[in-house]
Length: 183
Image 1 (spheres, rainbow, N blue to C red):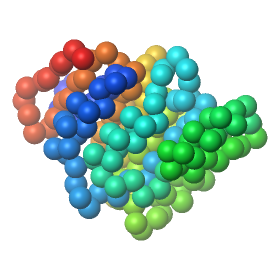
Image 2 (cartoon, rainbow, N blue to C red):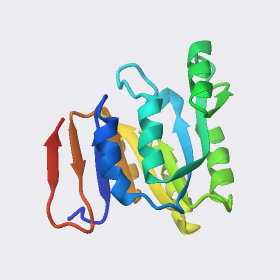
Image 3 (cartoon, helix red, strand yellow):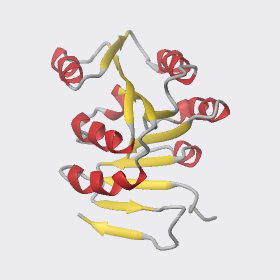
Image 4 (cartoon, rainbow, N blue to C red):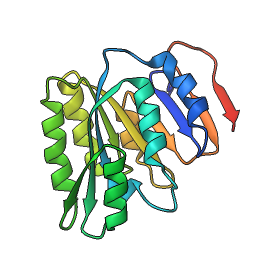
């Protein structure tokens, strides 16, 4: 099975400038992005994901209109402040965030000013969000990290950004060649 129909970007820490220059080719001035981040699943020390890098990559792809980070009750005050300093809205939920993520996703899907849904999660529980987004004509971007990045999420999304990798890999539907560059 070929994967020519989707774009995959692998991003390592400290290469935002390089990736930004590559992603700039795919930027649409009219693309309006709604970003939802599964905090307990993505913002972990072992992944080393920097919100600043993530924001820079998405800003090269379009304009971030909505940015929300969902956190559980164990989130530190420092993390909440760091999220606010990046310009994102932090939502603290008692317990599991899955239901609240679904509610926030429906708000973004039905928002007329957003045409692209970016979901940062490794969890396959959020596959229905991508499916519903596509039903409503929205482009989808999924952002995740290995290990445990759901293959179902990757296959359902129009664009996949894999954070925390040592390689940048871009499969473009326009190109027949496959680029793999160590950074």
